Amino acid sequence: MNADMLLIVRTARHRYAVRHADLAGMKMLADPRVLDHSGFYGQPCLAAELGPLLGHADTGALQRRQALMVPLRRRYVALLVDAIETFIEHASAVPLPALLRERLRQPWATGALVLEAQPVVLIDVRAVARSVMLAAPASPDRKGNTAYVSGA
Image 1 (cartoon, rainbow, N blue to C red):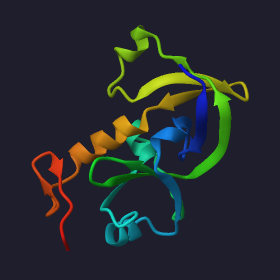
Image 2 (cartoon, rainbow, N blue to C red):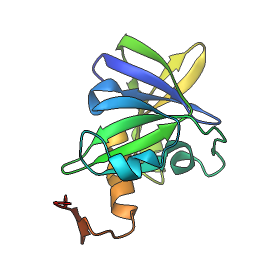
Image 3 (spheres, helix red, strand yellow):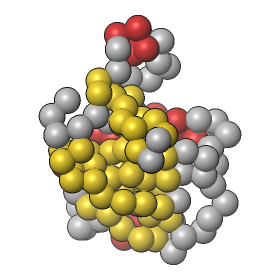
């Protein structure tokens, strides 16, 4: 994989790497429910905890969250994590072998790198955000699998 700027994020139990280029921004939230009302940059926003999406027992108890803001066509998905630990410039991850990729429940893991003698999985946050969007319950701004921004 190409060298790129990566963020190392922490959920309740694990650390993951995400590509900085896949994000529209990051936001500290005292209460994630604020996104339901204010959105992000005036666009609707759907929030989801990243930990439980990647591992059922990976649920954090922290109220204050970091949001990884992933842009989709007409809205943002905020993937909530416990912390953004660090930025790594010129990082290079090794692609996952086909044998591992074929056994994944979701195709979100794309590679791995070693950080402080520990393996860290690189995840495709855009693919995670698309899955969150498709699994979201219907709302007034959503028709079928296509999200629409209301004029209200």
